[in-house]
Image (tube, rainbow over all chains, first blue to last red; front, side, top):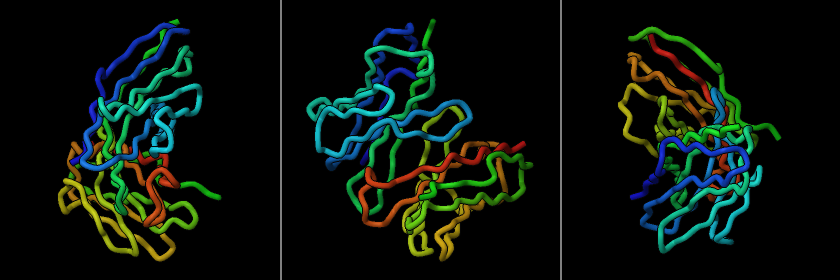
Length: 114
Length: 115
């Protein structure tokens, strides 16, 4: 079975500080992993995805994530937060089969303080 | 190349009514999946359609049903609306057999409010 746990429903950082959003997954088979961002009243925007080509994945807007199989983690980081990063972030896992069903975490709301 | 479009963007319905939400798939995508995102939660898989047949379903009751048309557009129908059906409904289109990281595209969603 597949599942995703996002630690911390709310994270607050100062502008310019490191952003770290935590995601742990459970999957019975090698997974695909994703991070999405959602701004208020909008849909999902893909930030980055892990396909096993490289354990360190770089995405848009300066975000990156590292796949750690031993820790079953896929944490999202950004060296320096901008005010525009304030949004909700979702980690998701997809099974490597024809059905491509996504399992999402419950989300982490990022607040960026001036 | 067009993306995935959903309509309407917002709507308000009364408890007990029926609603139809629409999704226009990205060009060439023959599979569509629907998700429900309740307030404060991550999206949850409702069902998916391939070749106009439902071939996967999440933990949702039968009053959630769908259709997929030959032009790959699709509908999500919800009967006997309940207050808890208030949510953002997302559709995603993709090509059957193609791994999720390569082309799985979400629409912007329809915000349904049940009063």
